[in-house]
Image 1 (tube, rainbow, N blue to C red):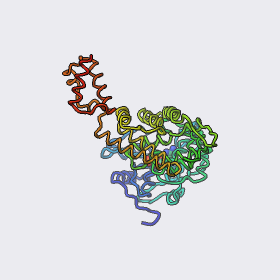
Image 2 (spheres, protein in one colour):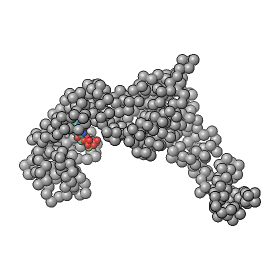
Image 3 (cartoon, rainbow, N blue to C red):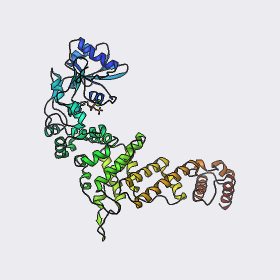
Image 4 (spheres, rainbow, N blue to C red):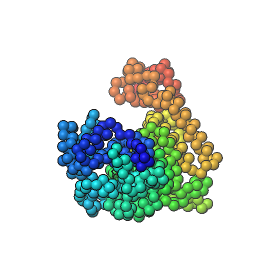
Length: 457
Ligand code: ATP
Ligand code: MG
């Protein structure tokens, strides 16, 4: 195959779909993300097909197969093969965008080139078929090789049509580790406030994908001015000075570095919580900034205020409740002291659980990794590591739940504790004593303590 005909490896059902459409006399290509990902050597998530066939013609070609027709209005017929849906969309162009988001109308067109012209970025505007090879009218392949996200056409016009593209630009940059072309980035920043026309759910989904991407930290550092369109609270963090003994970055650059310091190897759920936590952990700093007599910036109360701000931002973005609550709880204590001793650690284990405490340690490490690197910071990091090791040991063997206490309700009744709430009270009192180290978690000792308690009542 020649250089402009890269051999895409189509899954067998996709090759079959293209062949069926071609046999019926229609032009048909795989298009968009699957072409981009194939050229990058990545496995595409889904394979989209575009065709010159009108929706009714597509239906006729695949009559007898399971079809989903919910996208018909936009020209999409979904064919289900071996239980998997494949979208086949008629070449189309879009009418005006009065709401900065949804096209007012779509029009079907006969040429693939016109369909590619409506797509957002050059790297997403390529089509491929076994017959023609790559159709790349806008230099998508060169941009992919150069590592650039660039709008198809004039960036201002494309972002004015659909403000979601502003977030998609930075999300793809983070996901694929690309730069945003300077003209595209400048237009995105100029038009950033139009992102507020996008639904909260879509804004959240784009930010969520961006944050969980490998290049999230770099993209935040580079494109904070664009992201402030999605979360306006970012704007005052940019340039908010805090450099001194602890910090070498302003609040936003520190935030970006802290997001990047959360390792991609975390399990997906933890990665999500940790990246959102680092994004939001210092967002209240501009609201709390004071300058001390030494000329250094201080941020009294930024933990608690940050937790409230994180909660309200995630509410506004309609984030899942569990994520919102966990992030806010971590922001609230991200900069606070660690439990000083075993009793305090056991109480926190009882209240929050091992998983939450492990996340808190990861938050503290990511935060410190984004500080000035000096002995004081290294010492704090070593404290976090030591605490985490001790915390995991306590979680394995320590007694911080009633289930681990060596006596139970039956023992309490046998010892003469009155049936009813007194049983729970007695067991909780023993658990407190064990966590404090006043009593060992030893069955004989605890039975004796229950008898003493029963006599006293
Ligand atoms: P992924 O699914 O991995 O996020 P993708 O490129 O497949 O990446 P989709 O959102 O599935 O992205 O969209 C499929 C294609 O449709 C894109 O590649 C692009 O060509 C086009 N597209 C999607 N959203 C827009 C948009 N808002 N404006 C213009 N074109 C778009
Ligand atoms: Mg896709």
